[in-house]
Image 1: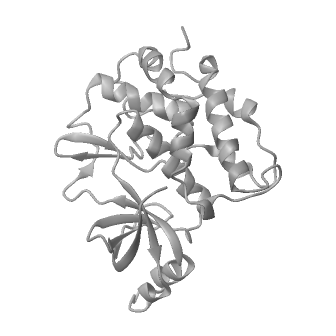
Image 2: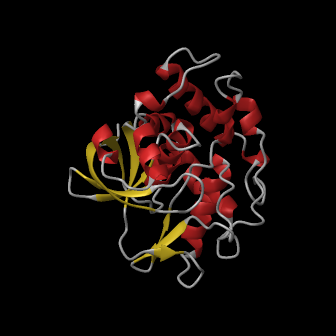
Image 3: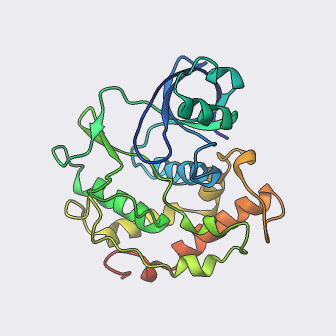
Length: 255
């Protein structure tokens, strides 16, 4: 599971998008961009962040380190902004912290990744159905002249049908991916070659390891999902069934 720390001080909001993440100092003396459980997108966005970010890191794609940040009710006490105070109050408990990369800037194409790195990121986004990596919203940072992938909450869209619908891995496996607007498409090597290299690495054991990072309290039960173990199994099945069906989603098509 993710390392668990306490949030000791709320520093400032990052007023980007609708989730209103914020900079928070932790008990380990680190500084984190915190994605809050009380934001409108809910807990499933935090799960997607951990799962996709965990896959990325294990496959050699640069992503900031993640921790689980425990927030107490006291952290909102001295916050003057009522919107932020309400968010912090609604987020008491475990939240997601992503390592703050000081001095990083949003990707603008001036420091592109290598073609091999770009193809890895395109492949990851296609595999996890992450549509949120376009020039309108690159979700990439440049830090020390290297590209880091961030913000994977839009991936794994299928879980937003839970708990009202039963899991349907076959439907996710058949979901195509439109890479035509991907911010790195023009930089990337042949994504099919990357698939041949990365797909064998995504074993059942690796997927289980990634899912083991997700805090149990973020896993919402529902129809066909009786307990957190069943939820983890459903995520694993969706990913592994999709991995076995690349003709449906792999940019350029499967060989």
